[in-house]
Length: 431
Image 1: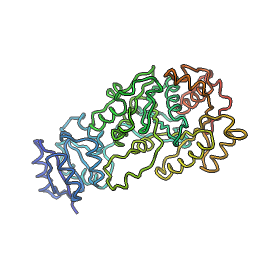
Image 2 (image 1 turned 180 degrees about the horizontal axis):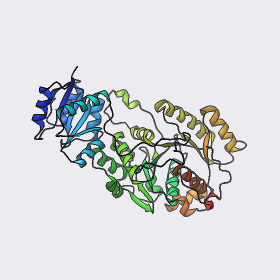
Image 3 (image 1 turned 45 degrees about the vertical axis):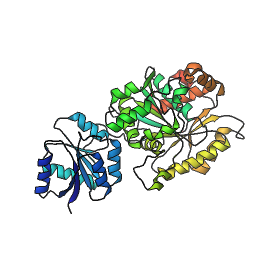
Image 4 (image 1 turned 90 degrees about the vertical axis):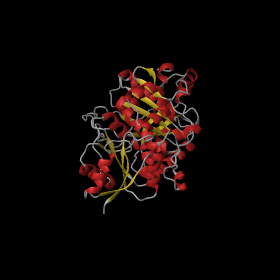
């Protein structure tokens, strides 16, 4: 059966001849509608009468949301660009169009691309390959395996509701990695209450991640644009601030966030993302698969990350929340294997040896070992928050700072200086 195709390449000089060539020959495709703009294309896709869309990069108002809505309607997309226009081709790929061809391609080649798109075959490979992990416990490649050029590591800092210290861990990891000579980008993707800007004393009304997501949605985001949107906090450390108000969450569409993270990989060797806690996906009960999803950004980050850190507090309430959150994560994203980090470890809330008791409880109720323990250091964290600075700046000898430095060295796969090992008593690293 022939593939039913919509076209939306209006204004192109080659449109009529291309459509005619597809219709005249037996290429296994049939043009069922020629659309004049994005609105008509989306309306046609909603009817369920087509399986694929052939569109040009010059189509007005074409953005990532439109491509996502086509995908939600079950319509595969193939893009056409003027011969040699690599910028337009890259824009289409950023919008989520994997199959992009020059407009002067033979009709049979275009028809083959349409058939492959409908069949779900991947498009032409990008210049960036996914890294192969050989250390599944932390999602890290083998020590002798080189990181692909232009692709940095992505670490998501996530955890249960409450205040387990996700932001403290995320800021500390990014800062310590930068101090170890690793170019780092800290991204605030918390759609409920991101506070990275306040913690570091930055303006919280800067475009930040929302501005990057807008450019990603328009297909205009590149490394230079990301540099302009990010604060340069110190050598090797940039920060992409989050939403100034929680009600702006619709600005962070999942596809746009994924595009931002891919660009971040090109910009920095290590990208650390501070995530929201909620994984609930019940917005889909509205049966509108194109509707914004508040937790979509969080799910997109967790799916894209090389390593997901689950940060838990060290008291009984926090540990119970952690166990439930791990169950939720297993249900929503079964392929994600988080690394457990227990923060704010101290004597008092847990009887006996806190590390041993916490390890036993989490292993029993979640089936997971604790990879990192971080001690409570309220004096140092209070001083850092009051000054709008990092732990390394206000408390260089802090035991918490030493633990974060050790963790950063492991995740960034760089040697930890001998001086950085002082203050590690009471901190255990497993795996």
